[in-house]
Length: 349
Image 1 (tube, rainbow, N blue to C red):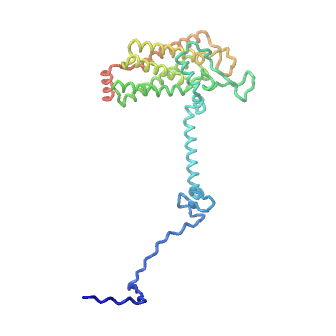
Image 2 (image 1 turned 45 degrees about the vertical axis):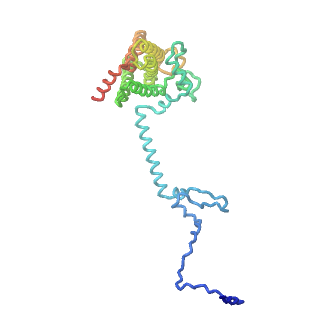
Image 3 (image 1 turned 135 degrees about the horizontal axis):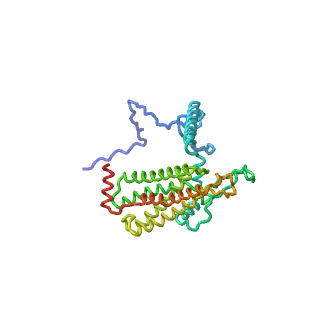
């Protein structure tokens, strides 16, 4: 059975009709926000005022917009009030401090340099062949070359014989930290150990200064030396104490400052410190009447008996008093059991 062939397709096919939606829904078109407009006062609320522009704007960059804040009258008034209060507090502080310590004089004692510190440490530890011991003086800039010109002592930076406060302060801090470290290495560290060490150091310095002031008052010693001179000289002993602790602990292998090694080092550092004080304080307690600058201090003639008493006082202070204080500061217990018991007793009290 044969199938009938299909009819040939028409010459032109009918047009196609696409379906038309009956319910048209409008979809909003998503657009980018408009660029910010350049306004003179629009930067107040933004910390990055100005245009971020990179495009064709003549090299614009991010500039903080604090100019408007500083121009605000309220901000200016607050700034002036704060500045006035700060100046008033600083002035009150300086007035109260100047009653006891002169700030310009205190700055004089910290006017040091690195070469001076190194040379001064060597002088304190090896004072045997140092010459001369007198402090250098210089006439004031407004003074003429007349004999009545005013002279002043050079700062420590320019005179190795001038006392300073930098080395004593650093030596006291180093002594406190070193003693605490050695106690920790022996297994007897407690927070109270640091406080006890600091208290001992400050009490020793205070007793020494009071003793010097009492001695100068009893012996009627009048000179231009200030209290800070005595503080500086009383603090140089900590350099010898530090050297004693370090070398003794190294040679004794952590067994304290006892034994022949500890006593040998202590004897040398004590002798060096005593000789240094004896030569340095001679020009404070025993002023030289033959000085070429009579205005530099009270260079009046001293009676022989009075000079003898001052010499004895200087010898007792330089050797006997220094021996007691340096022994108290350098005493370190090398027995761990006794150290722990002492630390426990401190904590319990």
